[in-house]
Length: 291
Image 1 (cartoon, helix red, strand yellow):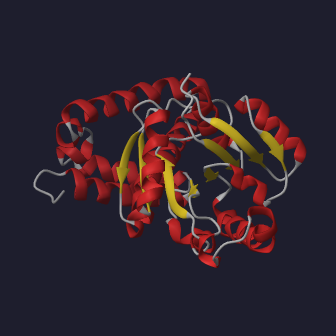
Image 2 (cartoon, helix red, strand yellow):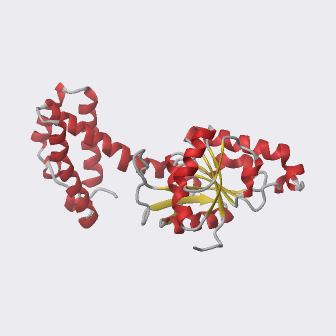
Image 3 (tube, rainbow, N blue to C red):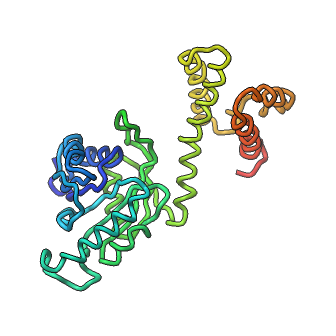
């Protein structure tokens, strides 16, 4: 096992934090503090990771790690950054030997895992000398297992030193790093929402339509998933235009009108979504449209 791996501290060891820390531990990283809201959940997280010192408080002892990964819920990142900065500013001199105000966190790298926020949310820590950035694996983390990360795209942004640390993390996770501008993160995250959350809503709506027509839920899922899988396989192999099928692709607007009329028996969001998605399909899939 490699011995030159840095030490990693995790703040917010939920689905993402546990999954990343466990994978990095398997790659030889040393795990330091594992911080959650309670000692009980911190112990459970450290157990799931297979290493780490569980704790429920933010304190400068976390800074024994070389890299600190903040994997809290989105709304908590700014609060965590401010609280950690306050703790460091309050006790840093007696604990770490003092130093200029702006250098208290020199040599430390602090990353968050949010997809839509850039490193500016970590400014309180950057002002204390930390290298800051963000690292977001473009993958969905459910409560029922760790997703495969090998070959997954991981989007990075940050200061030069933070990017070096983030790239190393990506390599050890098995991910492919892509660096983007901080201002691009919300649009990047929206693209992920299209491909994951929105497509899930569309498939669930289609499932409920079939159930309303007499299918069992199991039958509906078994009917629709092969269709969706084949469409995605075609998209991957042939690209968007050759893979587009259905009445819109054929210019059969009479059938589209029948679809719209049939959807009147369902909640209005179904009909509205069908109309908006039809316009989107014509915009991005019709040959000759701008890519």
